[in-house]
Length: 262
Image (cartoon, rainbow, N blue to C red; front, side, top):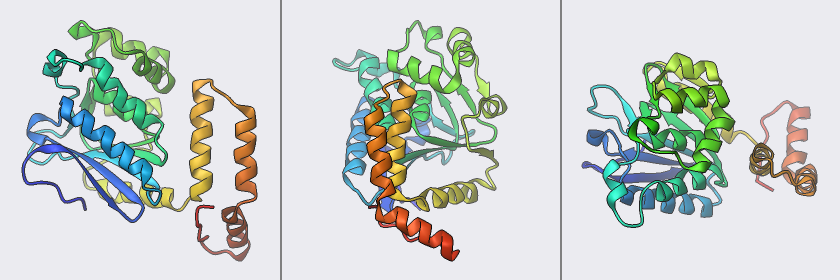
């Protein structure tokens, strides 16, 4: 379990066993993101990308002491008044998260609001806590959202649900989110740790090279930037890899494969 500072702090990075965990750590402020937190998140993302032993990044939040758990209340409104910040600066965080090398999992252990919803959407996978809500209040505050965030919303939510999110500013409850098919599961607090750990173990059981290369291809196909030669190169790379040989051998011998990432 990640050890967190006793007092509120910028997001905390902890790495063990091939899993990096970033925890938002301002529970008394509903884990709102200040400008300094954005810089910290980008630095953490870069550190994780450089650490090749990390195969999975989990993004979660400290919700201790909150009356109702809030993963993140979004971007600190006061940050718009600081020179060089605002929506353009915030946009860098989900954009960077969306193209990270390892698989990314948002462990959404509380409600989420504003720009933080795009951070959740930028992850590859999501698991959520029953009882949470999701709200995008941009137009209710007088703001046209930044382009990459709108694009991500449409690609994940679809046009109709995106219009509901932005053109009514009404919250989605967890059952509505579940019906959108964005989450691996919504679970009770009692089952939270076991469900998350089970998903983590399934991801770590994948062949690292195949998972990493497939993620690249899926992201490119989803964005419309399809490079067929690059996809074929990745296919050829994995088909001649030691991991694929090990995977076939393990299947034939009815044992768990031992992958080495090449």
